[in-house]
Image (cartoon, rainbow, N blue to C red):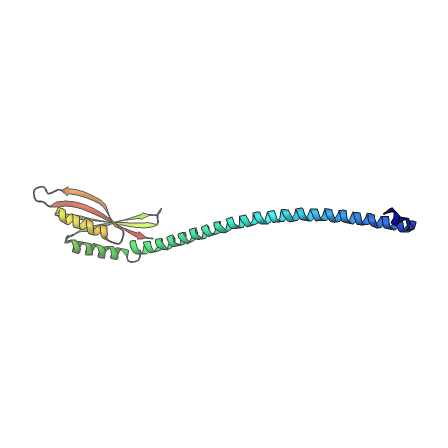
Length: 186
């Protein structure tokens, strides 16, 4: 290498030295920039990988949330259907309750002469309740038929209370006061 530089003039040697220095500096700068970019790339790929993992988690969570929302929507529809099917309507509820009671009494062969009605608001649950009281005189079998038909009634009609006035040990007839409760949506 010194044989080559011997043939060069001092100005050429200085220019060649500056050019070599500039090349070394340029290569050093390039190496620094390359390493910096490589580290940035590695950090970016790590961040991308973490973001993809988080995205998959969020996607699963979104799927679970959509399933849960669909279940709640189905439950809401069930409740609306439930209310329409099992509660008496507030518009014609008392008439529907009276018709159901007449049907039950005819179906079971029970004769009721006097019924009294009591009303109660159940504001906490958004429901109204009507208590229907009447006296029942009949056999145990007739009482069982009556309770069975009340139990199978599609509307919310429940036995609220039964007071035995006479048990009819001698005659086989029961005499009791029964309270049925019908429920209305508000």
